[in-house]
Length: 527
Image (cartoon, rainbow, N blue to C red; front, side):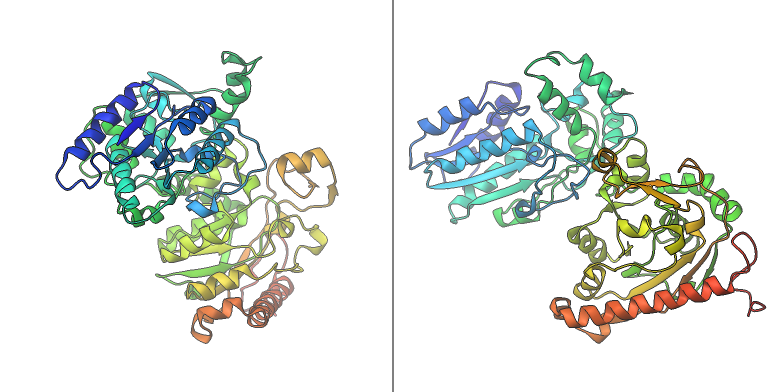
């Protein structure tokens, strides 16, 4: 077995580790033509890689150490993606492009077998664009962004390579992710590493970097994106190699810095939700909005499951997601449950809003993320009208739009979960949309369908009286099997029933509420 790559401290440590692994009894590949290529971890040298591959004999077996950086960090990255689902990005990132080209070069070599490993950022490597921050006394980060990241320990990387080489003997090949047992917010990782964090705006960092006027400008800007958005991977497929990580991201950081790992380490959410963050707002801003400004009243709370999975299906008005936030606040403080809402990528595109939505439990809307939430027996919140529902004119605010293709129904059927519809009357009044401006630059930049015109220009919400009603659950998981998710007739029938019940409830609440600002639609005295 040969390790080929630049002479870096990390590769020397890795070579020593692999030598110890293969010195252990039972190694089946002593003297076999196995090449492990470990390129530079910052950006691979494609010219060097082409030379390495050209010099390899055709009978060699190749393990290529690629990188999790093949995933472009952008608002559309759903997080925790599997090998076959690495999403294409609307943004060109030269670092990600270089790693993908490296994998393509390896695939062109006629090696007998090829295994591509995509390890997360190696905590011990100071040259890694992300892990390098751990080895600085002062790290420049981006204000208003605290992405969830993954750090792999050198020990786990060595075990992953050993598992890959052994798997070749069993005829296994392909691409596999190597990730730790748990993720960590970047801010927490830096704190655990003893690194001071200095948030500096992205535009200012780009100007201050060497080579910003020349060839390095693109790579410098691309490196900043890995500190801006989450780009986490799922590594369940690597179990087929016989690999299981032993260290979490927190443990990897502590090992890299020579610090003891906490005996009772905190468990960080895979997508960045922070219950302490929610609790802090639950003692300050949220009670004011919920109990004073909007005076939210509820009916049908008995329909929200106290445990187990369910799909909460509602409407979203007023273009800012305060209705979902108030549902989260109320369920957290009354039931101790934290619904995870699927959100539009535009909500995590900008500083501070990205932090806010992520730490409140918002996750990028996609089928895989919904499946992860339900598989964990959590509450999944979905607004089936999508972003168009949030931007409806005020005159049409309480007329339901199209419910898309019924993805919320398919998720409920596949994961055996009831559907709990809910509606809110009053949220449309806090940012009533009176007009829409079609501005192509704005739409492309924000990914919003228009620039909404409201009385306060979207600067602060207006007071209103809210009424939220949870409807009786639809036990679709009891009425149909998982295969019904692939039957368009069943999905359309359920979609019609849910939409009809929600529209009828909206009409009733609007007719019963005494005014926009006062009174209760739930009072028995109201006809």
